[in-house]
Length: 67
Image (cartoon, rainbow, N blue to C red; front, side, top):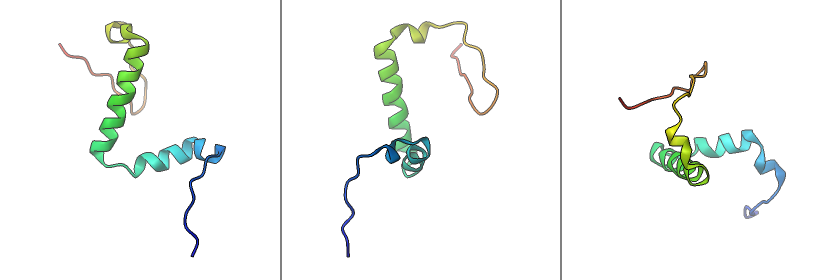
């Protein structure tokens, strides 16, 4: 029996491969990843949180705001 090896190639970089990986995560793990990406985006561009002219995008994305 062959032991699985670690692969480092472009095949793992496809959007489909990333989607398959993301689907293996629990809801808590998915939220952790989302929070990490949000923190990364805000660390690069802190003004993102102050944007007032955000427009909704048709589809499954929703923009939430606190009032």
